[in-house]
Length: 462
Image (cartoon, rainbow, N blue to C red; front, side):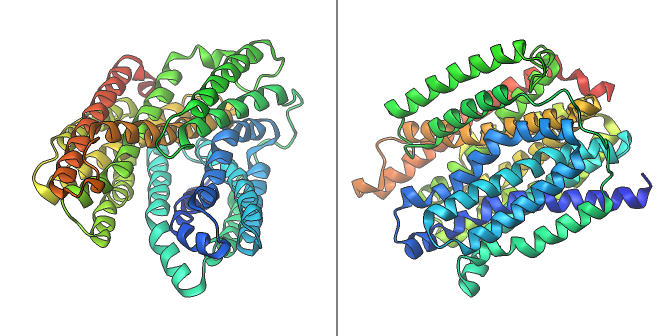
């Protein structure tokens, strides 16, 4: 492709990435309005968010494999069309249950978009520019996450809750037109080896059971959660067995033996788990320990996504210049320094903002280098499924982080709730919870750093 065609292709992929991340964050701000509009409880309304996340988590790998079989361009166009159509259904939904169903369909479209944007980079961008392209997609993802709450608040205030979904109609139409116009056609004939339906169903069951185990109960972990974890483990074992026996497996058995890829996926999961802690734990620390009001908490919390967006493009250039493996080590080292500083929980607002800048800079560098290292070492007919695995590892990390890191904070800060009427006690408890949570986070990052040191040589061959 010419340089001009490559730029337009990246613009198309960037818009798809922006849409899928925006749809994740923009719905959360609308939950109070949805509770009022449908006269529903929070437990029911939260499924507007969960249905979208569950659809992405359970189907992103299968979407990547379908693209490897039938071609990436037609499937991406179908994913954008489904996402846009489902967004309209969300905006017109007369009942909460229809809204939840439409959000699940929107999540299916988003799963296709997320799985294929990374895979398309390897098809459209020269190897020497892969890092910059990955950095651009990382920046767009961070911008979508950052923009969601503020844009959603403005739309709800001016036009009502339906506008947060209908805004995707013009954006989705633009994304479809761009993709139709500029993305390369790729393979023109389907791969006749077929699709692994049994493996797909078992993987979806595994991931759905795990995601539900981590999200149901709002912090409590009871018999239902344990049962779902057991179901996930059994289904996962059956999935691995099925892949070794299938004629055309969803994931080639050789992938299970690829230590470098397994290490990259494990690091992605670990880092996402750690990053989720900044979203789950920090609001309590900022409000209870530092005494910030809601507006100030929101302003301080926006520092992280903003830094991630700003750091992503320079991170891509550094990866192109110095190599993915070296920058991966630097990114994880930055993360370790930042999480350790957060575990000290000292020096007021500055003691939070400075470490979070270090954490998010390290995250951008790691994410860009890890994605670049993995995708440049994958054969063309496996890029879709491997891209799906990368997105899956990140999503599972976010889900795990919300549950596990939240539980660590709750246990460490036990005994200092607001209900005691002792604000000083609550403040000290939140500070203690912050310290313990980020001590655990630092240990996790060190583990990822060890994995990168041992198995991360893959990026040096890119």
